[in-house]
Every structure is written in C-alpha cells, then in structure tokens.
Image: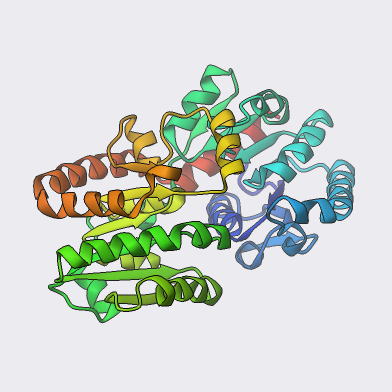
Length: 384
C-alpha cells in the first residue's frame, strides 16, 4: 500500500483504558501512513492523537447490571447511528477496542456489510460464557489479544488471532527500583512493607476491606516491625477503605495514598491484592502476592457455574500453575492471609524463585505491541 494514499479507519473505544490503547495505536499507524483519516468514538487521548470522535465517549460509560438496562434505548440508537455512518461511508477497516458488549454487536453488522473488522483486547470469553466465541468468529476478521493463552483459545476455535503483547509489560521496567519508589512515596527506605490493594470498585472495598485489614493486624501483632501501605483509585474508594480502617484496625501503622498503586507495588515487600489486572501489575513488579477475593454468595455460586478456568489470578493463568496463593470466598480469611504474608517473609528463597519466574513471564509479554497491531491492521486492510 502506498503510504501517501489516503485510507480511512473506523475506530471505537468505550472507556478510559481503551482510549489510551487507541491513542497509542493511532500514533503508530500515522507513523506509517500520515494521510490516514480516523473517525469513530474516542476519548481525550485518541482525539489528541488525531481521531475525529463522532459521539461523546461518555455515552458508552455504563457499568453494573441495572444501569445498562436504563441506558439501553440510547445505546441501541448509538449503535444504529454508527452503523448508518460507517455503511454510508465505509472505512477500509473498523477497529473495536475492548467494550465487547457494545463493539461485538456493531462489528458483526459492519462485517456483514462488507467492512473488514479487527477487535483489539479480547473479552474474557476463555474464562466464562464461552459460547460467545461463535458470535465473535462471525464478527471479526482478526482478534488481537494481550495475553498468549487467549490466542491459544481462539486458535482452538478457528478464529483468526494474533497475540500482540500487553502494554503494561512495556510500561513497567523489567527490573523495578524499590528504593526509588520508596523515595517517591517519602517512606522509610529500610522498613518491611506489606501493601493492601483491595480493588477499585465499591463492592470490592465492601467485601475485602475487613479481611485485608484484620490480616494485616494479625501479621503486625506477630511482627511489630511491619508497616503497611494502601492505594486507591479515587477519593471515594479512599474514604470507604478509611472508614473500615477506623472501624476494624485504627491503630494499624498503615499509610494511605490515592492513585499511586504502581508506586505502592514497587515499594512493597509483599502485596495482598484482589484478582484482576492488579495481579498482573503486581507480577510485573516482581512482588510475592496473596490473591484474595470475596463476592456475594449468589454471585459466587453463579461464577462457579460459569467460569471455566483452573485459576483466578493472571500470574497463575500465565504460568499455568499455582505460583501464588488464591484465597477465594470463604478461604479469604484473615488468619489464612496472614499465614501467607509471614510465609513469604520467613522464606526469602520462595520470593527469589517467584521473582525469577515473574521476570521470565514479563519477558514473554514484552513486545512492541503498537507496531505489531498496526502491522496486523494494515494486513487486514490490504486483504480488502
């Protein structure tokens, strides 16, 4: 393809994380093809990178179970308006970034209309609601995955796929500097710190604050030299966790931070963390961790029926073995969490083995993801 030729790309990101991924992709595409016209839905980062956002990204910012139902008429209208726009002015390729509940349905209709489709960031179809893979197979010309085991799942189901690496693996250094992180946080460079990272959602704070705090207090009672750190995504989560702190462990030597979770991970000796992306970040910072998670009884029973993976934590899924403890639901007791904290502190050889394994996994996740993705997108365009 002549890099002076004007090509059109449709693109849609539904939330802040997708906006950042989309901006990085746009920059990479424009390095190769300066004349690209890119339009769809994006946030501030994508707009700054040169995307014309046809609608406000906030229209897609819905979470939970009930709110999407109230917003359903607007979401249906938005999808219909996008479909009309792109079928009247067909792009050379459409790229859906994450937001699978909205994107996959739109992608299916666009592909049926003859527009090539690439989806970036796989939904957790490998973990639950696996039947969705059949719809995805009809909706995309290429699936781009962040994790290698996701690509294997799609290969097994004959869906065209390419593993492009995880952007966090590029952002986080292979050898993090613990002392520099402690200096940045203005904390003791020589103390032993345990990080408590109970999650970014209100429900996670509700279920995890008490067991995390009580476990920390048990560990502190046995090791009075221990110190504790916690970080929260915003002031609201900070206040919710602080209320639990005042209720359950007001004398615990715990320092609070907002929007500093990666610094906390880098500075800590041991991390207690909920499942999710934070477990991957903790692994990339090469920290021994205890993964603990509780949810409502109904949600837990439903998850047991639907989830098809042997592990909950990404480090264990990536390593395909139980590298770090997973304490789910009734197993997430303060006493058990405390036992694992002290076990890491008492057995530095275990910590060294984990650091070595985590470094290996980090290297496997490191690719020039933006370059890989832009190449894949161009290949799909060239096929057309």
